[in-house]
Amino acid sequence: MFENVDLWLTPIWLLSVGTTLGALVLAVLYGLLWLVNRKAASAAVTLVSEGVLMPIVYLIGLMAVLAVLLAPRMPLESVTDALGRLPAVGTTETSVTVPAREVDYALPVSFVSEEMLNYSLSSDQDVRVTAAEGEAYSNAIAVVQGDVPYDWNTKSKTRRGFAGPVETIYLTNEGDAPAEVTFTYKTEVRLPQVRRVPLVAASVVGLALVYLGLQWLLPGIANIAVATSKEAIGQPMFLLFTIGGAVALIAFIFVPYNTFGEDVKMLKDSGLSTVMVLAILFAVWTASVSIADEIEGKTALTLLSKPISRRQFILGKYVGILWSVLVIFVLLGALLMATISVKVVYDARESSNPTPDWQLCHSEMIGIVPGLVLSFFEAAVLTAISVAISTRLPMLPNLIICGSIYVLGHLTPLLVQSSVGQNEFVAFFGRLVSIVLPMLDHLNIQAAIAGGQPVPFVYLAWTGLYTVIYVTVAMLLALILFEDRDLA
Image (cartoon, rainbow, N blue to C red; front, side, top):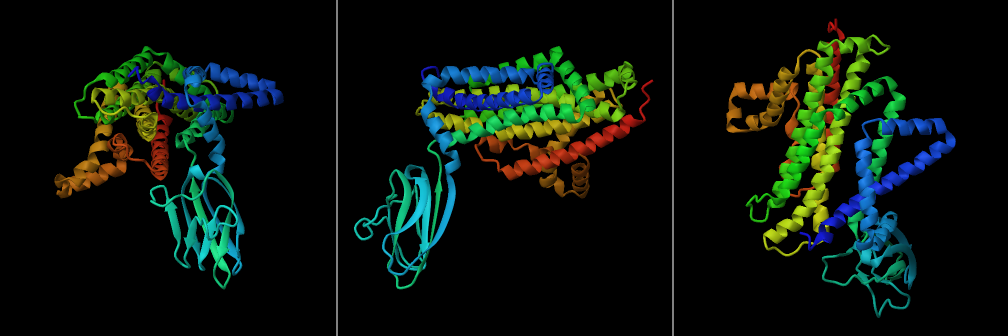
């Protein structure tokens, strides 16, 4: 593992580059805000330094240090070139009319041959295609027969025909009529892994903007949220869950799963489950302490005697708990990604398999991100349910009910689809539960993610919408239950 340290460090370094770029963008935005409104800039610094984002800021600072220290031994020049080429790659389609019997008709294009994944040429006349003038009959790249497209991709046995940067191709129309020619090509940077760098930077910037935007747009809810999240993170339980989860994730690297080369899949599945369960347990415990105990201890009555409504109280508590849960996901999620990168190299050595390249480490590491997103959605749903229950019941019933909902939300679809589900009563109960309780099984595709199956963005979008709808319903229920609760 330590002999091939660069293999598993490179994906982590790329992730650090993305977070560093996001931090630089935030620094620029802060500088502009300071020039325009110094009071607002000072307030923004205070909100971040005294809020729940500080653990994430420390993590970003650590990753920025890694990005700088590891840069000399990393493919910095290749990554920089690939980042600069990102706006220039993609799919391009150009159509042109070539006059009859025209020789070396110039068609402007713009691509680098080595970045080309595939291209297609179609014409209703016979057309010869070259990369230089005067080579139509001596060195044609492609001969397009009328109405028969010419296709090339990286798996084709024929040569690409282009070399280096290409700004113009030349078309020779052999027909007696004008030719309608369409040239379609797709290019990709030589290091496609750098596409995640801007996404990471945008995530860092988006997280900070959402946090500050909530503070400025909904100050009443935000103030309660900040106090709740700070109180939650300051509790020993947060430190216990975070350190315990970190120790477990690191231990998973060295656990012999005896799966004959599939240990990486087991680590991803075990790691996702560990992060999600710890976050859910922390959310339920925090909701009970922050809401149920405050109601029983009359602290909520004191707080509501101030110009704070019951709606602001409940919504602020939920947002605050969700912020602390997000911190757990960010900290443990980043560590999980790092352990996966290490595990790829470690497992290859333990299994006497060929040494993998850093691209494989990166692919396995990034593939876990959709699982973390879906797990956070599940934690958000159960947090909303826990908040609603905490308005009426103490911790122990809250834990029992949330645990039952967690089990039913995962098992009901499987029960209905099994042979037992053919029973009319079981089928009715399954449909009833699926309507009332959240369909958590839709948020649990860990087996597919562990197996390396890509998760479409559309699926994440629909599950995100489902999460928002169910959280909204749960919070409406919480407001109804708390509206007439006697706090005295």
